[in-house]
Length: 184
Image (cartoon, rainbow, N blue to C red; front, side, top):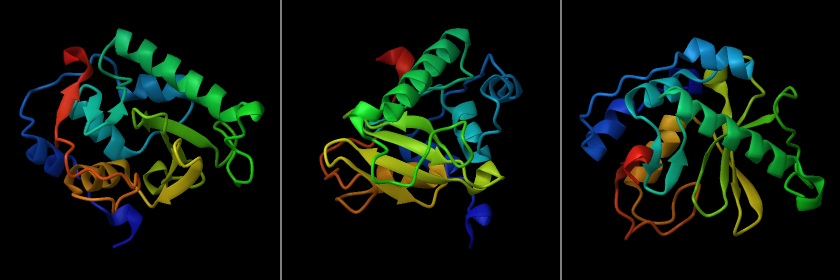
């Protein structure tokens, strides 16, 4: 099965987390994509249409569609991450072939690990459903890649019982849970 045929894992994630709450976004994806100037992957949109943004077993994902306040938080975090990653003094992009969005193929952040690490799409494919994922591990000061999509990576992290995932963290004692930002 190639990347474009990989089914979304949103139902599996919701089942795994026991998430049955209803969530109705107040902003549209069309507005968000227009404001960002880019179409986003369909699995990511499906995930955040079901979950209002929050922490998935230490993976923090802001929702740009939950409401206007969430959009402001999302946009501020996105701009800050792009500025930090692009800061030549911090050397995030030294010795790697990555550029930053909006450059063609540039990194577009979508989440963090709560430990200074950042998850980004590599926007090198015309179809966002084909974007790979780059993860900057702050503690190891290195980039690693995952073929994507976001929901597959998230499912792997949620079901992992050791260090065999993109994070390379021992998740054995980390609860498999979702904590919405509105409830932190």
